[in-house]
Amino acid sequence: MKIAHFIVNLGAGGGQRSTIDLIRSTSDKVDNYLILLENKRAYEVDDIKTFSVCEDRKLYKKLDILGDYLLSKKLNRLIKELNIDIVISHMEATAKVLRFINIPKIYYMRVDIAQELKSFKEKSFLRYIKRKNLYKKIFDNKNLITISKDTKKNLLSFIHPKNIQTIYNPFDLERIIDLSNEISVLPNEEYLIQIGSDFKRKRQDILLEAFSKIKNKKIKLLLLGTEENKQILELIKRLGITKERIVFQPFVANPYPFIRNAKILIMSSEREGLPRVIVESLILKTPVVSTDCDTGPREILVDELKKYLAKVNDPDDLAEKIDLALESYPEITDKYTKKFNKNEIIKKYLFFIKHVIQQD
Image (cartoon, rainbow, N blue to C red; front, side, top):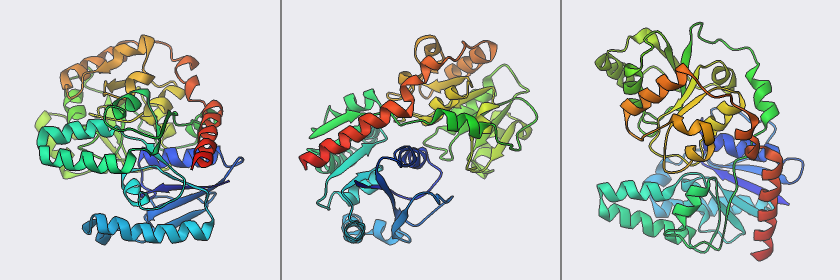
């Protein structure tokens, strides 16, 4: 069985890493191909057969729906050349292109588009209606995989899929632990860590305000995936945070040594799908403090870890939860991560793919 995984590019995002992990976890069972919408690569994946639809999609983006249609023609030619049996779209931008092609396909819902629509509705009702209609055209009566139970519940409030399954991202626990032991240049002092380069989406403003309020004024904050920039420098100055307490660490292919050696991993997002950095942190026994997004974190931080969920967009509550975690944190046992072990997840994933191919 030939499966094409369709993503935008090989950037530093969690969606890309989850797709690559999925391909590697099933490499001994199916024939996987990785298709990039545009040929932009922050790193190479030499062990995966990788192809690109175009070099750069800037012009196609300007053409909107016509651009998506033109890209779909290129994609369709590539699919036929490779003799692909099924295509899996992992991102919103790739879903908009794939919709024009008649082939067995699955849409991986890695973000909660219901929450995105809610945000649109608050800002512009016209934009909300336009985006909602687009999503219904793409996803109604289609085969969908969600990466969290709450995402599935929210999606079913306005989308009527043909098939839908919640299948967690597979995690290779042993590989993550092995990679965490690789030698890296780490801060000498104790530090908190946040991962992600998108200031707005990751709400780094909320994170930095919370950091300015915590009791421990010596501990540092490592921003992994973020280069030093004017926006953050101006904000920390306004918040009274000394520059020495902020460590900028641009993208690294292996983030695990940084996570393993952190005192706490912090996530401050407004919304997520199922944030893999939280799972990876727990695998490495690193405490986590996270905002209680509508989907994702509360499915991972359960039982004794629930008290480390902070209100969304509330720097005071986030600061309190960080202080609480620095004072004490429960033992992180395997019960929190066993449901993300790749073996059972892959069985469920392959069964769903075979079901879709037989139906279509």
